[in-house]
Length: 107
Length: 128
Image 1 (cartoon, rainbow over the protein chains, first blue to last red):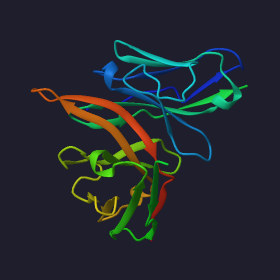
Image 2 (image 1 turned 30 degrees about the horizontal axis):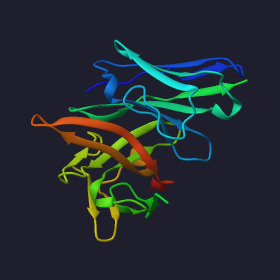
Image 3 (image 1 turned 180 degrees about the vertical axis):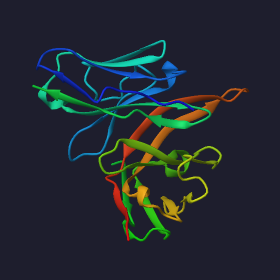
């Protein structure tokens, strides 16, 4: 099994780039996802298979994995991107695991 | 429209039982894997249980194994989570989630595309 560690909070100014990290043992890029959770809504998938965006997710959302760290990057961050972000990984032993979540503040 | 609608949450005493339900619509329910994910007050997301779409296998987090049972009724497009021997720490909002995945090839390679549809959640409170 593995735990996923995210920073509790990240702050960014509008128009700047936000980066949210997710560290864990045995991270495999093709099994990493990211979710955006805005207040009053349900979580929404923004990245799957490490770097792919579902239809409807803006191009400013990107992600990658290097070693044991996955990173979600939001370029040209907008106020509407303010939300909690969760990384998630799958492996055959623990099935699905979520990171602890990162609160992104755009100010 | 693809939709998941949970129901059945409520207040239950420690040691008690409760069943939450999730009605799916707008997609071929029987062909998808489905999961339950919860969020306890002030905490993050926690995967609870999953039901395989391809072979009906079930999976559980260690925290609920032996106490919770996931099942589905494909005739009524409904996913269930039967919760028994409930603990205070099971207090959470429970989300029904659709998982996109499939197994392929002779060695059973797993393709995981994420949890792409979420319900609005149903609240379970375990308290005396």
